[in-house]
Amino acid sequence: MCRPVLILLPFLLAAVLVSSCAPSGSCQFGVAPPSQKVLTQASIHPKDKHGFPVYRFQDKHRLVRTTAYTCTEADHIQYGNKSAAGTPLNYTRRLRSAAADWSYYPLGTKFRIKGMPYTYVVDDYGSALTGTGTVDLYKPSHRVMKAWGLRKVELSVVEWGSMKRSAEVLSKRTRYHHCRQMLSNILRIQPSLRKYVQLDAEPDLTELAMAGLPRKQIR
Image 1 (cartoon, helix red, strand yellow):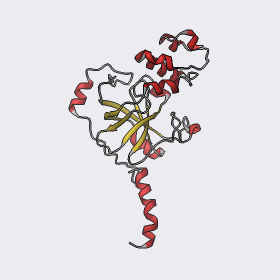
Image 2: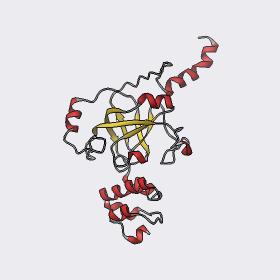
Image 3: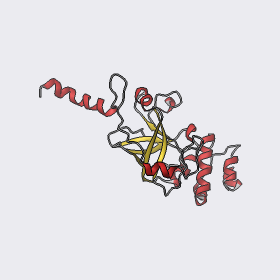
Image 4: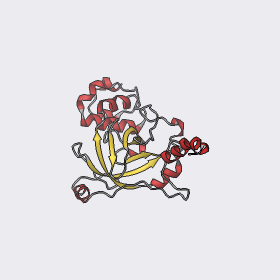
């Protein structure tokens, strides 16, 4: 192999790693359609506001509405390439970041999408995701984000994250409505976590009071 090609090889590999989008703008993500079994089982579950199933935690194979985001969007640019967990957003061959309502997919949850070779980790959240089962996948650019768009996929949970860790992080951000909502839902699901939660001193914590936290813990 000639020397110029050797020099350029790392850059060519990086370009492939960032996305599988052609110059024309088309992207090949390799997503496989959901199985008939998952589609059939989805019909028996209650639905969120988007009409997608709300699953129990024992249901690891799911029909999920997915969207995409990137760190240079207007509502994320202030955070740079950091996730809500405070870690760098991942986009590698093995691991990629995703955002979700942490009461649906707790911080650290790992999952796969049928037909794709990557493992995703939930390390981010977003106000538009609160109260839904939608999963927002991190993409490295606006072009790849738009190419993904909105997709119905079969998602398989590989490993559940930590409700305790989710509650601890969210309890420090209760000045934000969507964080209060997620925390309230987590405490309803696992009341035993109340003893680990140290809340912000905020004037309007109705959701948390409804979750059963003692007033001295709220104020």
